[in-house]
Length: 274
Image (cartoon, rainbow, N blue to C red; front, side, top):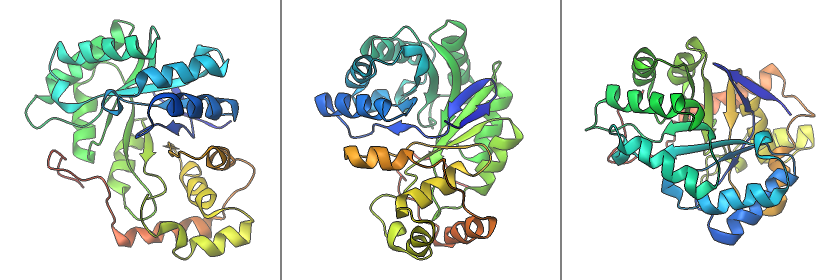
C-alpha cells in the first residue's frame, strides 16, 4: 500500500469515500473496502453516515489504529465552540476516541478564518484528531490557513480529476508540505471514462478506464484520491492501482484534458476558485 507523507500524517494514497452511502449498506461497503485492502476511510458530519462508517470499521475486524479515518465539519459550524462540538459529535457517532484527520469541510463566508483555524487547532491539541486540514480551499486560502495555524495542516481535500486544472492548489499544497486529496476523482456523471485518451489507454494497459484515471491521481506527487462507489466489485477494482505505471507521456496526455475545465461541485457558498 502506497502512502503519502504530509506534515507528519501518513495518508494511504487511496481511500474509500462514503458520500451518499447510508445505513447498513454503508457499513457493509466500508467493511468490504477494508477487507479488500483499503486503510483509509473518508466521511463527514454532513453525510449523516458516521454511525454506519464506525460500524463498518468495527465489523471489518481490522484494528482501529490501522485505519486512517477522516471526518469533516460543515461550514455553518466553524465558529469557536461549534467546531469542537461538531467533532465531539462525530467521535460519538463514529464510536472512536479520535479521528486521524479532522477537516474544515468548506470555508465560511461569515465566520473569520482565524477563528476557525484556532478552533481546529484546539481539536488537535485536545486529542480529538491526530492531524488537521482543510477542504475546498483555493490556493490563496490554503496559504492563509497555513499562516494562521499553529500546527501543520496535513491536506486540502478538493474536487480534482483530469478535466479540472488544479495546478495553483497543487502548488500551494506542495510548497507547504500538504497532500491534495481528490474527491470526485472520476469526474462522476460525465463522459470522462469514455473520452479519449482514456479508453485507448485502458486497452493499452489492460485495465479499466477507472483504473487508468485513478492511477493518474496516485502517480502524482502528494496526491491522494477517495473514490466512492456503491458496487462491491468496483471497490476492489478501484484499489488495484499499484502493480502498473503510466508513462510520463501518458500522464501528460491525460492531464491535457483539463482544458475542459469541468467543475462538478460549485455552490452558492463556494469560495472564489482559482
